[in-house]
Image (tube, rainbow, N blue to C red; front, side, top):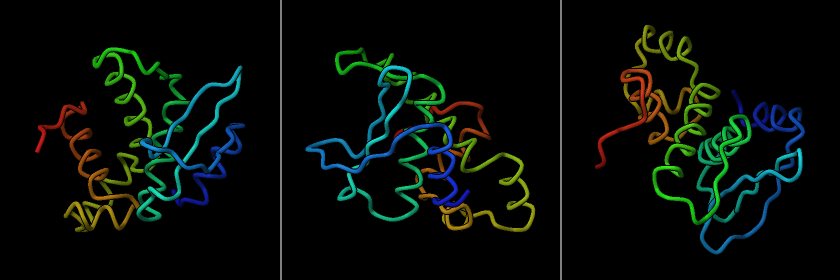
Length: 140
């Protein structure tokens, strides 16, 4: 999925994307009544791949209704972040397309990241998810 197609998909869901400066956050999403908004800090976007991953992750929060308050405990926040990541992975790196790319010989995480237009860190998370069925990657 291209960044343009991702923005089109988000728009078709009725989600408004705003660009604004944050002191700490890079991106966020929130419910507003029956609608959702995604906000991105453009000064904290390092590339189109990074923007794509951020928008898909925030869309994942909207699709799964996985929102939490700042005071929520770590486990609740992580559960909701994982839900958003799983949706983003399925959206940007579908399993069948990943398997097809690997079958064609594209196997290094950086090559796959370039192929799918995502960050290498996100690709490594996607590969872990499809291989292990969860997002509990060992911390580096």
